[in-house]
Length: 304
Length: 276
Image (cartoon, rainbow over all chains, first blue to last red; front, side, top):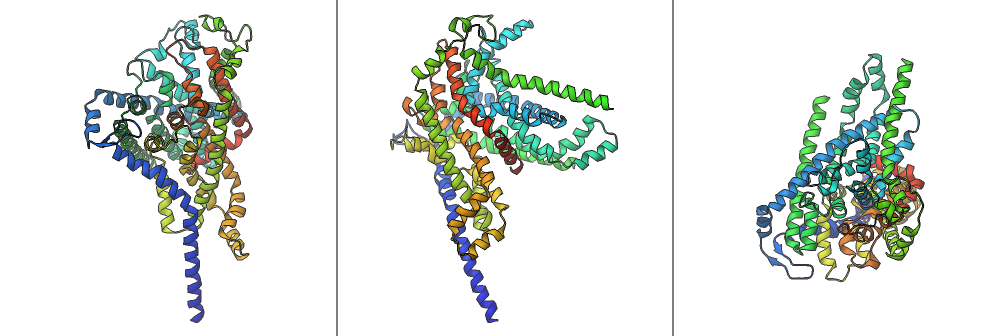
């Protein structure tokens, strides 16, 4: 009896010791979260209810004025359309291509890691450098792409200079740039499928397409979900590509929400309205992420 | 059956080879353009490779833009951010993984939701605080906010879960303090994972754009990405020879890093995908 109660004291002391040290170790993370995640989030919301002309100037409370302005502003709806268009142009095609190539790489016997590394190169090169290279390749008069297309009797295309083609041109670059990253993630998912699943299919004499449709696809669905959501979140925020390649043009053909936020804040010095745009963007991101998780998880459930 | 398999293999190599060429050509185009003279670049039907190799574009990189100071700024910001990120993300991840309590689990959830907050929402309020305080063009102002990486905490938490508890309690019985256990046991044990995260964080910071763009307005304090992006004006006839030479010099350091750590980088990405 006496022993067990003293054990209890020791245990309680140890628990307190753990709780204390756990908190000490987690503290830098909590402080960083407080200052660099929570504060900016709350401040953005408060900002969006104010009129703020540049940094350092007093904030004037205008409540929903900024939101009213952006909702009645055709430019905002256009930027929504452009941003969704960009996501629709990049994510489904990008994921499908990456999945197909990942399957192809897992199908070969040699040079697997060499090819994977080669494809990964654009992922480390940085958006600015790649954006500049592609702007040069897309140059209508003396750029590489029109020169190549003319050799086979196509074009010339306007690429970034055309209202109808500018967004597609940026999307093509993004699919090219993110291919390697997506392949690495998808390959990790594909390679984690136990070989026994395929052995059984092989014994039944199932064809390649059937094999991948009924084994690989459902079993890599969690990984595919991750790729779709990850790319959607990133591409909804597209900014650097637009900044360096088109500046939002021609006209407003590539003015995405991300670029609009930058323009409102740093060209028009209207930080309140920029914040309202940013809040709208975050709501869209959270909404789309929730919807995608829902749909893709449901599909996984029905397939199993 | 065997012949069909060989044909299939050849076909796969062919397709993958073509994609490989499509990946490499833009980089090649950047390099060959950087070695061409202006008239050769302007010509409509020029050849892919330069007729005559010219180095003046590279001389311009050192003469007409602050390349070396930007290179140093990029290196300083990336290296310091990475070191802080490794130390603190591992510390927080370890705290959550090994000192199990309900409070700590909530913090993990907090750090994960923070991954969904768009960088715009973080950047604008921080700018509004930093600019009046005279912190623009201060490199520490772009280092500190992203140094304790939420992504890193999540990743290192996963690695720390696999540390054997016996190892930690043995050290405690020997009378080691909690902090020295972290420094002398935990960090070395998870060093493989920490270095994979570190290289990824270095590359991410090196290529980071939005926050450095708004915070660094003086040429002398710009990072390479900001300097490159702001030194080009597409409206008035771009000098592509010079721009490609500058791009080559901007991307060269990361290509070298990639070639050295290629295996670790790709493993790091693969792990982050599986754990996410």
